[in-house]
Length: 284
Image (cartoon, rainbow, N blue to C red; front, side, top):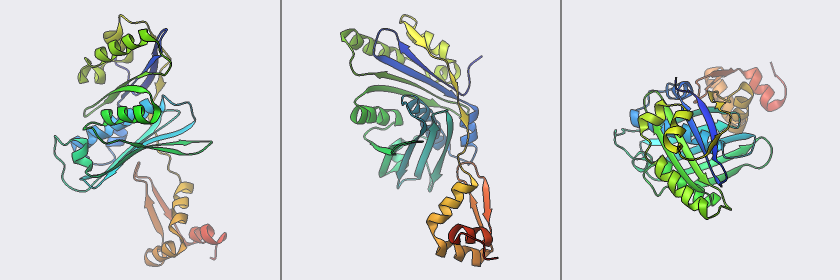
């Protein structure tokens, strides 16, 4: 039976070529069922989730990797995140009509795409993703070449039930045989069909593509949906709004209600809690 919601790294023995595979089902549906997304947006959201998992697996850090795009098109914002322990979440914001055949550029219009790495310890880093291609995979491949100087191939697919991805990278310091291997495995990977990557488990996919190569698989990691929102984080957001705006809402409505856009968790704060937030104690 096909694996679901798993991430797995692999390497081609005796070379500087590595790879990773991901397949999402339940976690993908947990994300996309948060809103009534058009099919074309749902597909892009699934591809972005798979990409976030694959990219987080190439980094040695504890923290969060997020992929975010903003534009002036019908798709105003797209955001997916994956933590080092493979927890994902994501959302899209839509204002306007979308077409089934819309490309990434048509959906987003003018705007920017970025990858943000937020370690648990250390400095936050953000890199701009070039938007000179029609697909998310091609844009991210360009990012790795320009920002990381690492040759990268990405294949991303998504349907109504699953999203999946395959990543290949050639690390610096390779030899001439690595050139041949890199060309060969890229050609083989390009033959994978969407229904194969979305339905088959990692061993079946890698055997189908690379059965003539010496491939070593690492232990798979499970991937799960989890939102990082909390009452404390929501209070932090209110603090950034400032006391004037918060007390204005309290005076008008009696309390403040905030919903998490990722998971729709609801948080309610009364005047006492706002007093404690800004004055350090309750006035009532």
